[in-house]
Image (cartoon, rainbow, N blue to C red; front, side, top):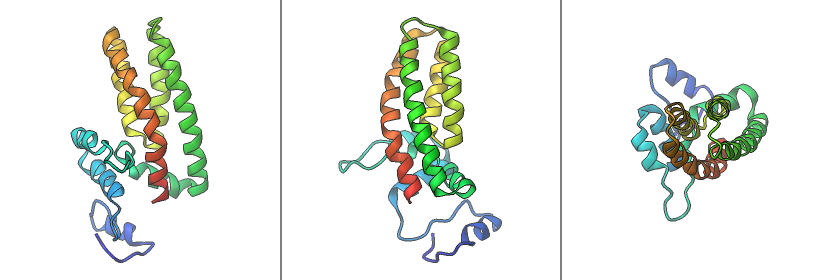
Length: 171
């Protein structure tokens, strides 16, 4: 944690063996996302994903490191455009996944989960990717009830992704 803001600070700290750098003043959402990434604790992610009374974003659902890497590689404008495209595609495919459940088309369910999950990882949408893996696992086990319960959670995760991803891009 530092009050010093310099372009090479993050690189120098990484070379020195630190996990990361955060400048003051601290943004609580960004700190939570960073801690989630470093600790990798799914329980902490679930707790951090709960909004507080003033509608805090769900940034623990998103990997800040992935988002920062995307911005570093393609620039902020292209990252925003890519996130917008991903969010529209993910919402559409998740709706399709819900449509596949009643007919229990396991191969199509697995394919749909795999397609969304791959893009989710690329964009840093951790919670969505994890949930899709659980849905695919339930479908592979032919557990319709578990898959249906997980797909029911999908809408909430997809609904909070725009806020989380845009918060990470804007910080």
